Image 1 (cartoon, one colour):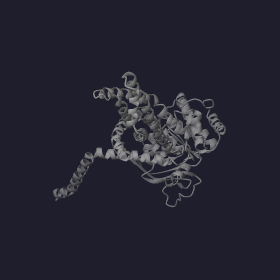
Image 2 (cartoon, rainbow over the protein chains, first blue to last red):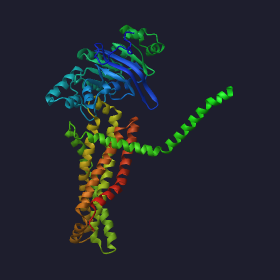
Image 3 (cartoon, rainbow over the protein chains, first blue to last red):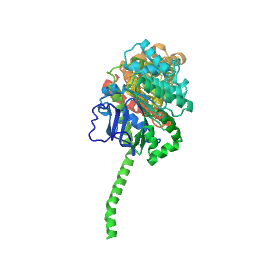
Image 4 (cartoon, rainbow over the protein chains, first blue to last red):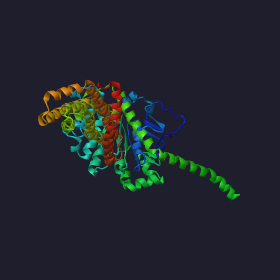
Length: 270
Length: 284
């Protein structure tokens, strides 16, 4: 594995690291009697597509919600460029969240707003731009994702793939440093899945963002991942590039990848 | 030795089990009380968190107007209809009751007093619970389970400031307006039944209203309506905001919002009436 030992005693998490953008240390979370994460350590590489895989209910979504401070841990810390996100007060947290864009599993678009209003929402809330400027930015982002012309439609009138792209456009309007995708291809047909994968890759390349994607769609994972981490039994079981994960002989990792039936294709892609 | 050792080993386990059983029993016995305090505390915390955002920017006037439109203007037809027929039936019953003593001209005053103090605020609040409270619980519940509330938070927008505060403030403003309108149209209906249908003298009817109804009665009704509006919409927001478990959870939250709000209004009415009467009184 290429990842440095996260527990290394000499590491100074308060200093921004040129390679690692997000650093999770000792994250523990339980809901009632259910321990979801147990002293989990994780690192997301700057400017890369970091994919987190794992079985359903393994705690992938819980981990990313902690990254944006949507959940508070029982213990542990998350460092983004030397800032401990759980030490921020409400004002600092609001500023901090503007550095993130979160694309939800089912897009989480506001039903009562049009596509344009959904995408304009963060700009209206956090900038002093006038209507024309906002409209131009939204049009630009929608056009980049092949959605120009849908401005006046409501989310209910869009297909699943289009909704995800609108969700991404909304996440991109504030030019975030970090984009988080929560199971972006769940429920999509193969063509739409491929389109979403291309969208993730193009976005990462065009906007130079750090992407964190959670997924258990292995075909998609092999297409987009620069780095894969697997959550199992409340911890990161293995991390590495696609090749490293394919070469991993841990029985669970091996079985998880083999069961997807796309290992050979993934190896080819890698 | 082995047997003895086994006994020694078992003893603490038995104690733990017994203690645990007692604890479980006590917890079960007090579960309804604990649940009630928990839910009540949850409402107080939500209200506190919402109101703490009141002086903070951004104000988002459009959200307040939209909430006022939904709660106030949207509820207007049903509130007016209920107010009119409540006044009419109250008048009809009063006229028949007072006619026994040839005092039917007092029906107007009694109806006015009952409408202003009790019927308008309480029935308006019940209509708000059934319509706006349920609607808000469903809307926020759907937003919760479809992660729209998480999306707001992820975009650095406080969902309590954005979703809850405008609704409870709007309810405190439009609740009294709706109640006053229900009172006015209720009195119109009462007048129609008493004077036009039951042929009570117009002068006597109006004079008795003036002598029995006081400004204090109307003010008490307004205060009650503001409190009821706040409580009803707060409960709707709480049930929606904390909805879990998909569509069924939203449905249960909506049901709870209507039931809790209706019961709360009726229970609160007694204590609020007692308080207001002791503070403001009514001239004899």
